[in-house]
Amino acid sequence: MSILNAGDTLSGHSGTAFATIGQQSIEMFYVKNLKATAKKNKADIKTLGSRITQKKATGWEGTGTMTIYYVTTKFREMMKQYIDNGIDTYFDIQVTNDDPASTIGKQIVTLIGVNLDEVVMASLDVESDALEEEIPFTFHNVDIGKSFNEPTSR
Image (tube, rainbow, N blue to C red; front, side, top):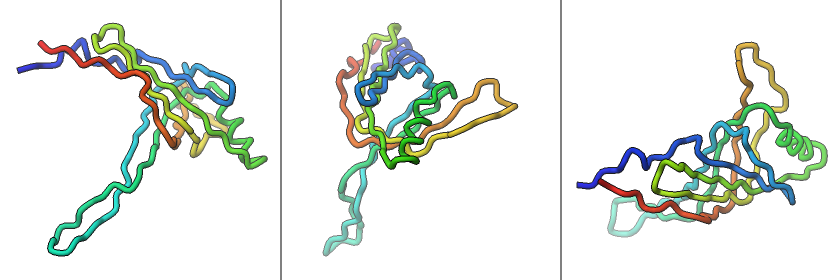
């Protein structure tokens, strides 16, 4: 029986995230966590001679959230541009998982066409040691530029 070596699990803080907004590449060192999910949209399909309702994939949607430390005005500026001028910003985020203690190597995934759903425009909190904001977003494509190696077993 094979088991996963504990050393091959990934440390959550071993990685990087970069946003490409227009011609500018920004290291997102202020990200606390980021999770992006691709979800299938499915339609109900009923057929003659069967009582079961089957499912058929009809498309997909990409959604995510990131929690960041409240240290950048970039996303507020993007939202303000939309508020004032109706100009929406779509950009890419490249996420690299790379734990040097693991033998699985690195994975590089780029979220394409990221669009922010909502942005905190101002924040104060006397109970907080470090201000944070959660930003939900959508994306319309994904690229897996580099895949993990298969984990070793013992």
